[in-house]
Picture 1 (cartoon, rainbow, N blue to C red):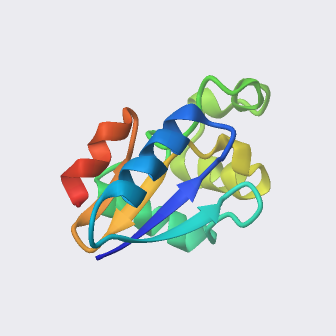
Picture 2 (picture 1 turned 90 degrees about the vertical axis):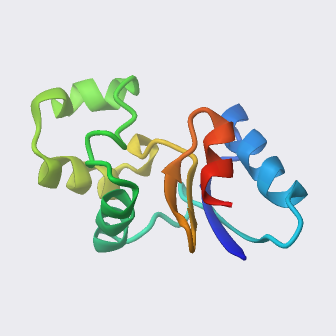
Picture 3 (picture 1 turned 30 degrees about the horizontal axis):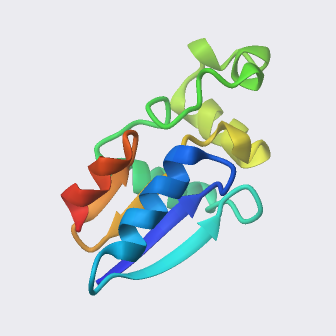
Length: 114
């Protein structure tokens, strides 16, 4: 099984999720450091839809930039635009497998799609 993780190596939860993926037999892991290579806007929207989430659900609302940009009251299109301009606003880790997509907070949620 292939698993793609949108990963931030500075994030403890992201590192723990990656470790679960790497320790699971039969999982081929693709690591995308989303701060360096964010998903395209349409791709991110599709990931959220597949996860049953909205862009608001995937927003790092506690990131000071979210408040600075007024994203607390913004619509989904505005939030996605802000995420494209500022990938730090994308909550992580986001993991996709053939079984689905999960925002893995906490990291054990990744097991649902393995």
